[in-house]
Image (cartoon, rainbow, N blue to C red; front, side, top):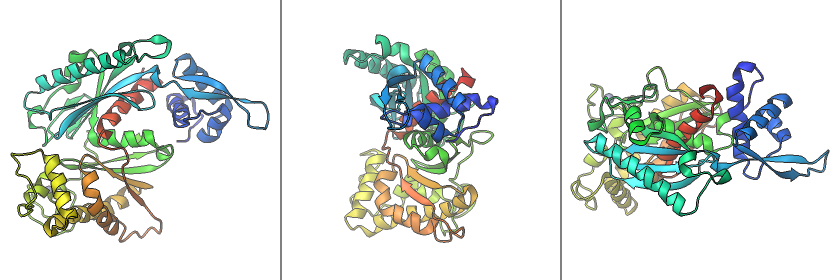
Length: 405
Ligand SMILES: [Zn+2]
């Protein structure tokens, strides 16, 4: 991320400096921040002082570079502020508490969202309280011995679309039928006493990626989220593109050009016909190793499908390869539209599907790359907690931005 010295971009510049310090695990000097950020010496000095005053950054000895006088090393104080992240996924609810480095301090896995959101929100509130107790019992305290409750500033929630991020309302996600038109932000604030932000799981996952990669925020990144349904998110220079109504990145009905059954939208060959997990499982009746729906969770059935494919079951292998082929065709279009430096694929089901699907994705997506440069397509390394961690970082981003305080 590179900055600007224009005064109205002060808030953004503060994030840029904090990010430079955050990514330097062994500490960083002001001179290095100036080089990395493109900001002026005066701006970096002013912002650094402000971050130290707010307790987010501390000085940590000096570094002798051999040239000139020794430089003061700056480091983020990880426990200076905490945030909770909640991921409402049809496969289960994950709750985490993270610090300023997005390190998970405590975690809980709860049952999948049911038909009674009020009861589920109470469960989340109880989980957060018990996670704070757990941290106290383990002897955790913040700078100056401050208690976790004092440092936990708010909650980020990641949920499937459609939702209204600006108003914190879950609107009509096909995967959470009991939660439609729910003012989730307001209800969770009432249940926990903490301010809450809501965003799509895709946007949360991409934010987690941008926090974990030092260079990601300099790039245009396209993220593909493989959950119960499929979605995408795009960021450029660390800024997410949400669109006017948080609907950007809804790619389920993107035409793939492949032959397939009719979709409920009236067209043929929509991406979701090949990539929705339920559709994938419905098309696998002959896979003998596949447990029946009544017996186990959707996650276990997908894992069984992948295992059958790896064990030589041709039908299972073809279905998973078909997932990759369709996603690759969609990506071919999306790469032309967004011109990304990098494509990251992740989400709860990608881990088990990727060994067979990723080669197909790459083969199709890059088939007609006429631009003469290589687009990197990689799997996320952040694991299954990416949605919850990303939700927490969405809250931290909002909280840390001086413009929004
Ligand atoms: Zn469709």
